[in-house]
Image (cartoon, rainbow, N blue to C red):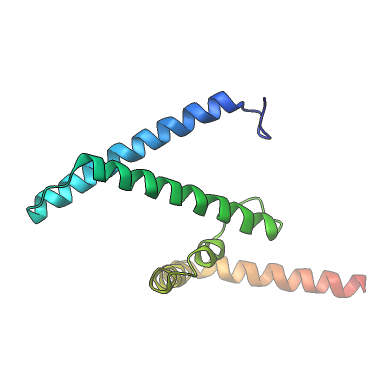
Length: 129
């Protein structure tokens, strides 16, 4: 059975399993490093369970982001989608907004470009009316 993008379920499942395994290994490595710095020991079973839960959470976030972009008739996710997805976590949402504002401050050119395009679209709409 083929998916929308032309890949089949077997390929997608294999890719997902590989991604999950790599994520699990990274989580184990990070946890062991942090535990060593703190002088603690963490069971690999606990770390594996935590990595699996985190991976499932990230899958849900990715689906939500896709739906937000789709709802806005876009094919790609933007920063506002990510901030909206984090709205339940006030601290994270605040950090993301700060990060977004810092990025916009570093690249004021893109903001001006968007404003020019918006004005151009307004003029076109006015002409059509």
